Amino acid sequence: METCGVRTCGELARESVAKLQRHFGEDKGLWLAAMARGRDDDPVKDQSLVQSIGSGKKFEGPHTLKNLTVSLSEIHRPRQKGWDEMDHRSPRSGRRP
Image (cartoon, rainbow, N blue to C red; front, side):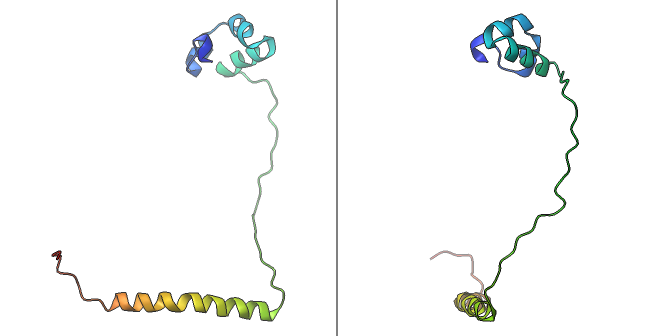
């Protein structure tokens, strides 16, 4: 666009259709001129919106869920220890050593 001196949509709207067609070709120039001026003759199409989005995980049986629970508890245990230690800290004086 800048090669033909156009940097904004307002500038594009002020350009002549003929100039845009010379620079971008007949069809594209006509389309750019129409879009810049807010003209669109395409019919409005009804579009249904997605009503819900879901996700799931299939477990291969009770043993898989048990293994997952054990794994999660092993991950949580060290973190819980660190959180407990943080809860029992004494307040800092605000002075730096």
